[in-house]
Image (cartoon, rainbow, N blue to C red):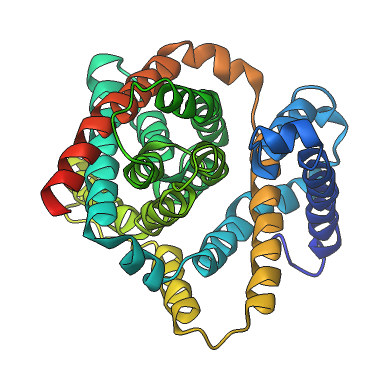
Length: 344
């Protein structure tokens, strides 16, 4: 046992080791050029974690490994629960039915598209396809992290999915404002904000793409956080679907549905935040702690990722993510225009 009397010291050493890398990742993310690009500590964490895994990992004491696994698994669930404090139900109400409907349509269509083309067209394994789809459809790296425990996927598959989010989310962050300023997007700033929030990958990327156009930032962020909240029902539905699929394939008959309770508690935390009795300075501290825990989970995930696995996966995950990115860009544009015209 990782926290038995004999092993607890080594496990804590492993956790502290990940925490030290996390401090470095957060400091690196504050470098002005990286901050201006919307590169979050989570992304820096997985990069330096992978660098360590593929250079000096063989020098790590084996007794510390449970601490790394604890950071990648248990701390991850805690971080996803605390992520709920970034959202309120009032934000969803403020953006109106148009923002909510765009979020639902884009999330569900992108997720289904990613899974289908990943498994059917490109013959990816189920876990890689689902992780790539969740990253593109919901909220980037955080969604990949939240989905991984439900699938019980290998760490390298999550790392591949995060890589696709970084690539196409960063491209989107620059392409969206450029197309709008060039007059290619025929929509007002308010509608553009809904479009960005409903289609761009990471929260930081949404802030950058929405903030580039006057009058669109608030809608962009609120619609994005609406998408973030939908990770909870998505994970619950995914857990049910996986259990039913396993039941059909099992000779032992029906398999019990495992509810991802951390997703349920995520909604509970959002509800507590919505009530408003916790002071904003406390919420700010919780969010800082949450960012640290998420970065720890990402760093630990990187430490468990071998570069050889990326070579085995090849270009297929990138092609799947490219198709989803084009759907978000083009399909999202027309869907946003249609929804806003129908409801406003």
